[in-house]
Image (cartoon, rainbow, N blue to C red; front, side, top):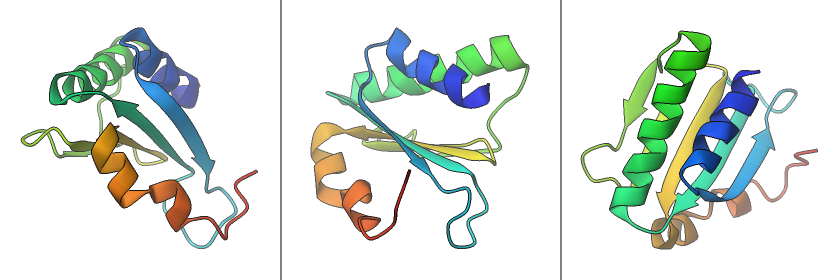
Length: 108
């Protein structure tokens, strides 16, 4: 349910290129999923963060365990323990290319 709520929070402010990486039976990850999405500007990246955070607080009565990147708003990471959300500006997402980093892993 939390996964669906995060996706809804992203979609509410037109976050794009949403990718879900299932980590459940991979390696020894401490989380179950990475969600990666993009915004076109610092303002949109921050708006996506706020939308997710506020929607999850309202719907699930839970706050992120940890957040990073709010100051520069190029890549904001939201850690909900079992789900880690990466919100990138388009150019930063292309540079780090997290999906390609895991290309040798089956994410089905």
